[in-house]
Amino acid sequence: MTRFGVLGAGRIGQVHARAIAATPGAVMTAIADPLEAAAQAAVDAYGGEIRTLDAIIDAGDVDAVVICTPTDTHADLIERAARAGKAIFCEKPIDLDLARVRACLGVVEETGATLMLGFNRRYDPDFMALKAIVDGGRIGPVETVTITSRDPGPPPGEYITRSGGMFRDMTIHDFDIARWMLGEEPESVLAVASNLVDPEIGALGDIDTATVILRTATGKQTVIQNSRRAAYGYDQRIEVAGALGAASAQNQHTARIEVATAEGFQRPPLQDFFMTRYAEAYAAEIAEFTTALAAGRPPRTGGHDGLMALALADAAVRSVAEGRAVAMAEIMG
Image 1: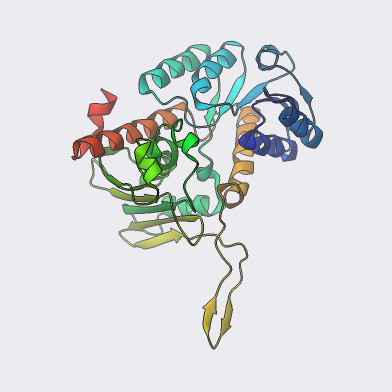
Image 2: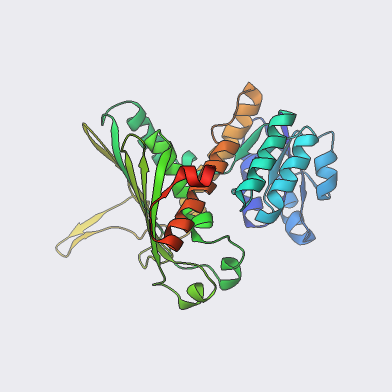
């Protein structure tokens, strides 16, 4: 039985606490949050007790911590938990600075700690099924991957100022999915970006609309399209084309029905929030972490995945700023 301590009882902390309570082989031991009411709500719903963050990291009855605190605390908490002998699940990103991520991963390696990064989309049932088709060879060797990711609407301005920018906050998920589906590391990144959704986002120094092209050394390509606006719901699609055909994962609707009348075909609206669209993925990633710990194997998404996704985001930022394709060798050094 893996005994969990959750650091942070905000929205994502509550999601992970729920998943822990529902996962065989996992138990919620403690949760910490500066807002006692948030921590108490998690304890009331999912068990365990309220403790301080320091007490959870140092506790002898906690085997693993789930880090759901603000991004600028992640690297420090990973290092502290690793040195305390804890297994670590951390929401992405590890940090917004590549050098800091490398230093943090050095501590993880030095201590031999288990680290899983919360790239939840890899655990979405539809995306996992698509990956299985690709890996099974049904569409032949991969040639192109097309990823569409559009939010229903932009986040508030105060979030924009601390997010690290659209590429590091939103597109980072798509960079991870691209690496996963391609089966190769991208060699170059070309990105173009605009402000078409909300002038405030531009005034705050960020973008809200982007297209990114990734190319591997063998010529495989990925096109990522992002927007902070989709009037029709949360748009999440992937298509993989290969030498023998293509396979795709389509959008999820609020119900899987279709009505046909003389007026045409009608379907329910799309899911309109990431917490509902990826509810199964959030549960599955905690189950994967628990299973990996019990089996003594590395989780399927680790620190290297976090490093590479952030590096791709940095390359995209530089590509937009300089108006050119950026070789990953420039970023990785």
